[in-house]
Image (cartoon, rainbow, N blue to C red):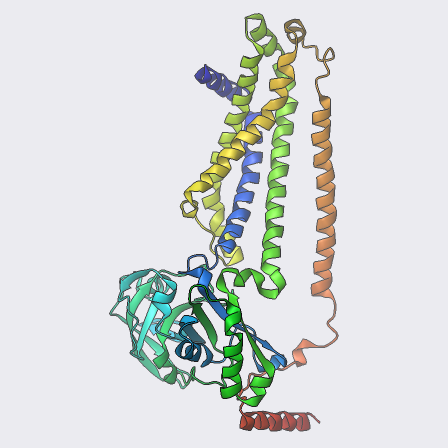
Length: 491
């Protein structure tokens, strides 16, 4: 019997080709847009989820009374290491890195790249996937770990352990570095990519710091990213007093008076930054995606309902030939489910085509269809069932209740056939369209004002320069003298 319903549904679909194609395409576009939005949201919520022992992984953030002395994502270079050495019952492991941007070349290929100079705990502390080479980080100052993305970029393949890359330092000296390990590019964690605009594909041992003129071990270097892996059962509050004591005993008085470190769990770090801005943005995007999906479903249901009245004579004939109400209900529900299923299949086919365009626009790769967990299949199945039921509900339960004689004559006035449903759906569509139009106009005016209004000063006369920062007593005096000299020159 079910097979017979499917055959009839296919026949009706091809009988009204234009209506069917329009209805399927409209819902498919809505589904595709929603899939792209939800893929981005899911990708963002998966940040740091692939890190080993994530519930015990923390980043050391810094609160400065004087914000010019440092920034919140970094800490003092020596702090993580000394915490591990002096408090092993609290700290299980640590990782620090200093980022540099430098020229890397292989033959005729030369690019400016982001490099991390960090501790040897990099691989086993976070569990990055090794594709080629050694799983034990080398302490050779002229060795390097690269990602598969960098390997493809310079060699066209990932099996490149044992090859060399030429890396330049800030003095203009070039030297070959031996590739010891190739790892899978860690897209979704903030250990390798602490900020959205920073992408590191090269990871070098801490001994390489001398080649680049970097001193990671200093207590007066507040620009080092520091991470801790706490022992099981240890709370971050237990480290407050040890951290304060170490800073007071080892850092300069200026740093000790201005700095208050705090531990933030990596599991929530990305979403809690900037007062939870990222989390709020993702919730907003999710709302937009669901709103677009709702509009597509409402449009689909409205078109299905508007076409239902044309089936009155068919209903009358089937009833006259002995068809019962339950069979008619099932027939209409099967037909609407077929239409929704085709829309879902079309959306799944459109997603890989739209994905590269969105990747380029966002500069953030969205996951492919096969990258989602297997349980994600429940979402399209649930959508098909719910939307199919909503679209087939009116013809199934209202029109199938007509008497055979009234249906054969095409009379609908004898029954309160439920025009309220169509009117409500159309009214909802017009109302939401008006709200969206007004909202788009307001946002457009706000953006125009933001980019078009004068700032109160001429940007072409603004000058900024990065200067060395040494927060020892001698460094503070030197920077103060330099600032005074600059103000005298301006006068």
